[in-house]
Image (cartoon, rainbow, N blue to C red):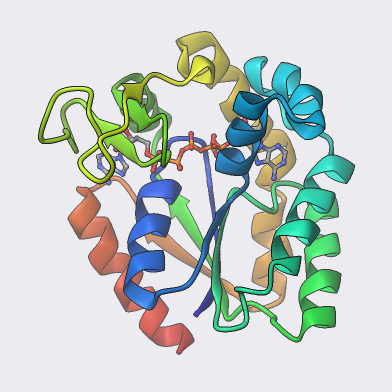
Length: 216
Ligand code: AP5
């Protein structure tokens, strides 16, 4: 299964990507997770990315393309991948097309998750993220079994620094300006399918399964 997930911040891409990755046993490649880990470790990439992320802005294309190329070099993507958060600009999409063509791993489809800004804002406000594995929870919609503790690895659940209301407004604006042009980009290639993401995580998963069955 070779899939690309796109959609606004907080729409639920990470939640569905984790489910798809477990179901199809393929790697979940989330550029936001890779960057947060780099920031936590204080690597060169982390130091470059930190300021952009904290301001709610996109990290420059050249940095992101290099990260993704290196990630695909790990060689565990032969049986598939779930790309979450990349590409985010048309330039990144063009670079990805070239990389995946070179590797003989073109995507089967692109899923666009759609829902209103008010729903997104409520989701981000209540999000808690595992410090260790970055699994997202929600205080109301997907609470952990024990407060502030990850069900999977016992990691501490934290609020992301870019999840404040002002940063979310900036991220939504950047999504519209820089990432939304990917919709016609993938539509023209006949790859894009839309999923209504406003319902419960389970209902969204069912909608995703229907779309995925068309790709197979
Ligand atoms: P990234 O981590 O990719 O953030 P994002 O795209 O803004 O997406 P989010 O992680 O906020 O949300 P999501 O859609 O995954 O939603 P989730 O499943 O968590 O990127 C962070 C930053 O890194 C960027 O701002 C940028 O600076 C940089 N970056 C990353 N990639 C880049 C790139 N390619 N180019 C340049 N810069 C890049 O769900 C949200 C919440 O809602 C959770 O609490 C969840 O439990 C809950 N939830 C999920 N689904 C549902 C549902 N159906 N019903 C109710 N609640 C739900």
